[in-house]
Amino acid sequence: LNCDMAGFREVDRRQFPLQDIPAIVRLFKQQLESVSEPDLALLSIVVGAIENSLTCNRTITVQKETDTFGEAKLPAIEYHITEALYTKFHAIIKGAVDLSQYGSKKFASRELIKKVSDVIWNSLTRSYYKDRAHLQSLYSYLTGNKLDCFGVAFAVVAGCQVLGFRDVHLALSEDHAWVVFGEGGKETAEVTWHGKGNEDKRGQPIGPGVVSKSWLYVNGCPVICTRPMEVAALVSAINPSLNATSEAMEVALLQQELLWLLYDLGHLSHYPMAIGNLSDLEEVSPSPGRPPCAALFQEAATSARTYYRNQHVYPYTYQGGYFYRHKLYKEAFESWANAADVIRLYNYSRDDEEIYKEFLEIANELIPHIMKVVSSGHSARSILKDPECFAYLLRFYDGICQWEEGSPTPVLHIGWAKPLVNTISKFDADVRAQVVIICQNEDGTESTGENVSDTTVPGTTDGKSKLKSEDDVNAVIAALDEASDDCDKQKYLSNE
Ligand SMILES: FC(F)(F)Cc1cc2c(N3CCN(c4nnc(C(F)(F)F)s4)CC3)ncnc2s1
Image (tube, rainbow, N blue to C red):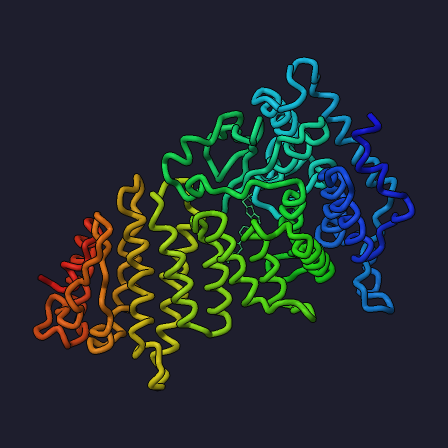
């Protein structure tokens, strides 16, 4: 029993009660630099307790926000509460799993992992709102028997750590989590649910998800966590939200400090979303002496290109969102075009709703808003006179068209076409004429398409005029529909 309590024993009681952010950072640093591996249960209980007390019920009388040195005051986390919850988690896991039944001690088996997942799963409250905030930590599990889908996967990995299986690790896509295990971490197993109304596949390998080319399984390029990266995942999952409109500042500061600690120790380099989370926090309150958030967004994209074959969308939508908020519209178009270049590699399946909503918002809310805002401006450097912006938008829309091709589920519908046509028609023919479309042929050679300058939009005579009437728009929509089927818009654009 002692060896398993290593995580706790090393934590000298003198550190408790944990009164402020530096104390928590010290605990994480001590765990991350300790000779063995960081104790996932201990760290999840500690940050969960702080988040819960500062965002859920605010029962604690909120001490004045900062002490004399400007450090955010935290509700004191008592040693005995932390130790009691830690002991309870150990008791639940060790009490339910009789290791003698699972043969090899060195590597976990699928049956063992399914058993740990069942222990967590069967101890959850029967029915509760699964998407609620603050359900991601072991504190939530141990005090309220509630976990969200990420929280279940994390708890299974923490449970396997309690049982001494160092091969079981968290695998993360952009919208799902599962575990890898066995020699070389080659085996995979579902351990949690995904989305609404889908039968869970717990215990099964994730193979079929990768074969179907759904974004949910990121074409076989998930983030495979080390123990410190599992700490980064639990820190990323900290949710400072008090309600739909405000956040608990001290929780956000704690998350930011812990992410910088993990960044400095090199544990975010292979974790684009964690870098994106840190960058979002830096945008709101920049840390002195740290890289600007724009550089961090770029780092996240570079990490995804370097380690995950550029199969992740979020680094580009994080970046596009930043540029959009800062009115850097051309840069936003480029990021969104890069996001579309990723999604075109996938087949849209019913499990991919989250990223569908992301692209829908960009295409039908954000880009139309930009077009409205820039239309009123009259600067020569306007977006509407810039052929590179037109090219970025074409790449964006084309990526979504190609995403739809070969997919079991349609992507585009009339709701997409009107904003799309309105956006394209804002660019004059002479601007469009400066865009040359290079098509990659099957054999990899390139052919420049017809110069789009002689694009005559159906229903007009000289190709130089702009869309005028409703039936012009409908004609283009019909043509787009046809073009997006076989996606050789080249023929459509040159209107051969
Ligand atoms: F485990 C699951 F199932 F929850 C999948 C994961 C999600 C996620 C994350 N997120 C999700 C994406 N996310 C985004 N926030 N803004 C985003 C963008 F649209 F601006 F790009 S994406 C918040 C943090 N941040 C760190 N790690 C993970 S692992």
